[in-house]
Every structure is written in C-alpha cells, then in structure tokens.
Length: 210
Image (cartoon, rainbow, N blue to C red; front, side):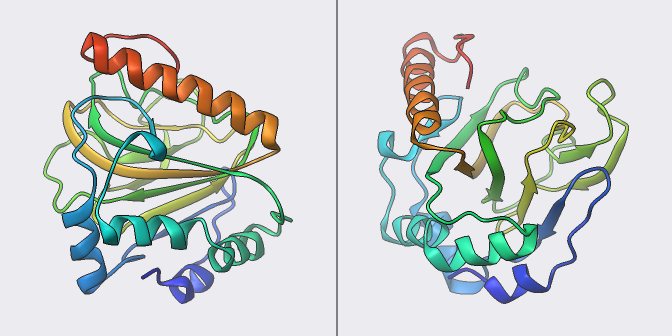
C-alpha cells in the first residue's frame, strides 16, 4: 500500500531541520479504501489508535506504517538507528480553532511522521508549515497541504518548529512517532488517552495536552 520507493527517492531537506514531503505516498485503490475505512471521529485531539475502530484497509495501513520495511526507509533517509525503538500512533479527525499552534515536538520523539487523508481540501487554514522560528506562522520554508496520501516526516530537533493557520472541522490524519524508549511511550499514551476521554466528555473544551 505504501509507496516506499517514492519515500526513498525523495530529497531530504535540511533547512531549517531535516524533513521530507512525499505526495502520493498512498495511491489508487489503496488510498480510496483507506479513506472509506478511516474511523468516524467526532471529537478533537490526538487519539490513540487503540481508542477508535476503523475498517480493514485502515488496519492494513497501520500495519504497514508500523512495519519493519517502513522503519528501514525512514532510518536510511534520516541516517538514524531506529532499530527496536517503540512506536506511538495516533489519529485526528476534528480540529478546533486553537489547534495547530506553533510548536516543536517533545524530545522523547526521534522522528515524527504525518500522513494526511483528506479527500479534498478547500480551506485556507490547515496547511502544515515548516517554520524558521517559534513566533511567526508566516515565516515558513514550505507549506504542505493536508491532501489525501500526502506524507511529511521530520527529525525531531530543538528547532523543528511547525504549525498551521486555524481551521475548524474535519481534518483527517495519522501521526506516528518513533520514541526514545518504552517509558516515553507509556507517558504519551497515558496523556493522549486522558485527553481524548476529557475532550469527548467536555465536547473538545479540555486543555489537557494532546
């Protein structure tokens, strides 16, 4: 299902930090099946994959993303040893106006992978921006539309600033992280599960970190 050759051939950008963008990482019937089988998510936040149910193609996609073949091409591209590192995978389906604020990822994450699964995208907001600083959303190097099948992956660094302009409503994505160890995975899973439950209960008003 994954176009691993496209990933391997894509140029690794290094300004302002190591990242790459792969359009059409999933194509054709495989992409259509995943869009059809993606979980029906009605509340905001990053939700652990154990907390939602999707169809067969969605499950197959998760298996490939978390598999050894993809791990190897990611490791080769970023020149990292990812062997044995635990994986945390979450999904998003609904965005709030405050989502997408500029941030860097936690130092417990080694590589972040984002795969977008929106059949079409007309909104002005919601395009992920690779940023030069943590202050100005318009000081960006590249803007990535959250179009179906588009992937962005980046090495987590002190300056891996990213974010997007606000958008409210449906925005589907899968986020996968290679983590520094099992303790980090346990911590992230705990907070994501807690956040998801509170947001479901309070209708997205929770300020628990996501």
